[in-house]
Length: 58
Image 1 (cartoon, rainbow, N blue to C red):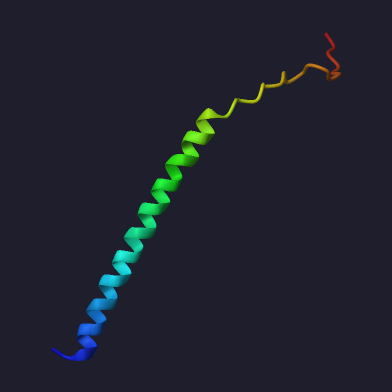
Image 2: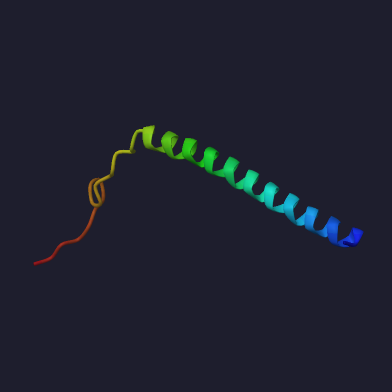
């Protein structure tokens, strides 16, 4: 087997390992964000017309 072929296959394995590591860290960080957002209090919804003037003619 040529040295270029060996190095190429090792580089492909390293890239795959790195991608899996990054994906794993991203997924682990993502779950923390989801939990944090779930724990945040929801803002009170404002009434669509309250405090505003509008003209209603019959």
